[in-house]
Length: 80
Image 1 (cartoon, rainbow, N blue to C red):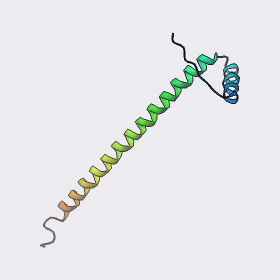
Image 2 (image 1 turned 135 degrees about the vertical axis):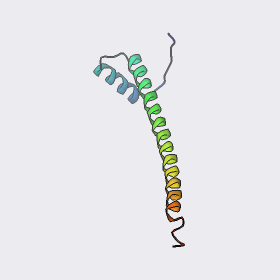
Image 3 (image 1 turned 180 degrees about the vertical axis):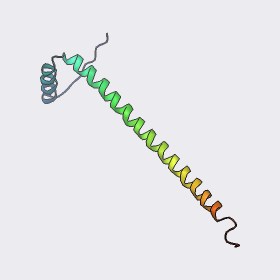
Image 4 (image 1 turned 60 degrees about the horizontal axis):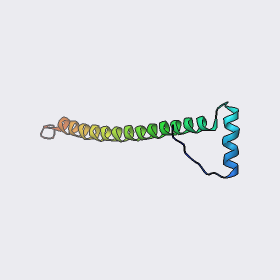
């Protein structure tokens, strides 16, 4: 296992210490879990953005299709 050295101010160190004690974890385990959760958070955020972009492309395609459909409904009716 590798070692990471982290420099923090006293307040942050105390927060980590208190939270680790509260959760009955070592500081190392708390930090490992925190980073894993943050990575999942980022992945979910990126996935949400990808889904939003895909949804916007589908909306635009639907608008275009509906516009073409509306045009076909009017085909030949202007001459009647």
